[in-house]
Image (cartoon, rainbow, N blue to C red):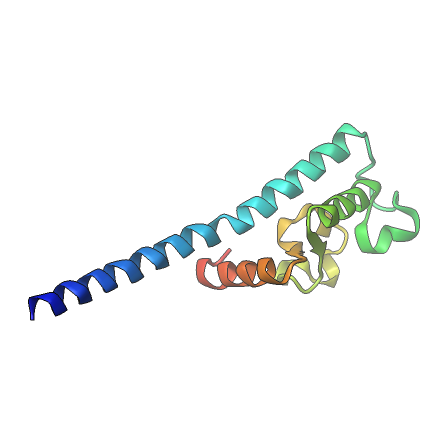
Length: 125
């Protein structure tokens, strides 16, 4: 009987440790996305790209400015795509500032996308 209790306690502790570990892994996904977006913005500023709406020419409606276009391309190279449906904060009226909001990017990879969705659902990012 004591072996059964010990085994059950060990299994419960292992399950708890796995859940905590998954929580730590998930909690880093959006933070990484934010830091990559910030790095892309810093690169745009360093390149002295315009943040003025309309400076992106034909891409103006989607990205707003030269810097916005650069941020979208930079994030695409980092494995994230800009999406109006990524978050309620990225609706059609917010397209002018979408590239400046980390919530408006979603991971390209299937596994990364589902990890992002899980983090969003469980940690209210």
